[in-house]
Image (cartoon, rainbow, N blue to C red):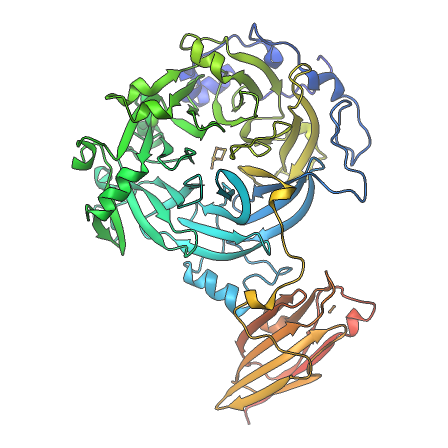
Length: 631
Ligand code: CUK
Ligand code: CUA
Ligand code: CA
């Protein structure tokens, strides 16, 4: 252990106390190095083996857990990582942690032609016209509490949006700008069958936010927005007291949970951390739907807004629509166990997790009576995930550790007892989220866990003042030997969360089915140019190594619309149609049709070229756009 990297971000120092009064408020445990703090701790299986290197990409790797995926072999899992404020989603293979693909969502992306053809450009325009987003939470749709491989949903914390990625083609196909929400944080779904997608609204704003109540924070509101996954249209909002943050659904369609760290309804950090207790909001979905059916709502910006605040008449009837469960100050993550029995919340300023029993919530008069356990797990517990063997894994931001603990043991032990803790493992450093294979479904696999650490510090070659973050792969499949750290993966800033899905549950197509596309494909031999009143419509194929026309001649000022189909049928022969001086780069994969419209306002010769390396004569795959001057 003495040979481990010595950079230590885990121990709050006197300096930190001076700098940040919050540190002084966090209950302390004995600060011993490397997790030897709890009696139940056995061994840190990852530590000694971290010192070995198998030469695999230069990353530290361990002996016993078989994480090596040799060249030519495929991974067992897909991991969908959020891309943070890059606005994209990244697809990795697990356990290799090889980066497989990036899916642009809220950003522009030349290589995929995303934001450069008419369809994706209009989708981004209709969703507010912003050029970036802040993706935190990727969730794969489920049927009967199993991943069904239809869609991946993500949030945009920056602009209050939700997006849908079609997993048949691994591309974004819908974005909704939630009208009553700023700072959509959690992106979750109502299980078992993904009935709604929820945008969990973090930032409180006036309702509607049209200039009223500017400096009256007591009139601001956070809402939970329910969106139809098929149409991606808002169905209803529920406004709450306090705010909302992260969320998760129960397994039988009744409960949805979110943490609320701003019960104070403050607007400064100081105000938001005044109260000793905040709460978890438990949304009773059938009761909310009944209120909707009964017309118990106010329509704001075209969306029915149901009042779920503490004083609402709907919360003071026999069956409250939202129940508020008190939890220690500034909670952050909340997730439901795979069997649907408990919801487990934890937060930044207390060293416990709070366990609520879902069935009890519907029965008890006081929602706090649904709390059935409160184990002490370590400093700064943020997020919790699960295996299929009754264990919870919680990221400890301040301690820079992942703690494994026994859920039933925690229910049986006294509040604030450490008895349920089985083991802790150091991570490098300061984990935000973690995720485990299939953890959001009712069928977790309990083999791999990824710790998404915010700080990498000394783990990689320096690349300037902006560091990569460090996503670490941990083997959790051996309860005897304990958790084992097997890989460091440097990642471009900054994933918050990931969903790890078995490859059997994801079945993407490798060639487009033209029936799935909105545009009529151009068939070979049917290339065509039509002109009418300053408008030129070009329909042409592309294939190795040519476009349908060698030249396209237009007049200065013409509006030009080019529709192009890649008529290849072989997998992975991708072409693009780039007209750089007109800022165009449209990618077409086999059997894909795309359309781009622009105004030819610059006379001259413009080479149209294919930007994808598609064959030996790829460089010759060119045409000319000839723009004749007006006079
Ligand atoms: S939040 Cu980032 S570490 Cu958006 Cu799920 Cu907790
Ligand atoms: Cu087609 Cu390069
Ligand atoms: Ca608070």
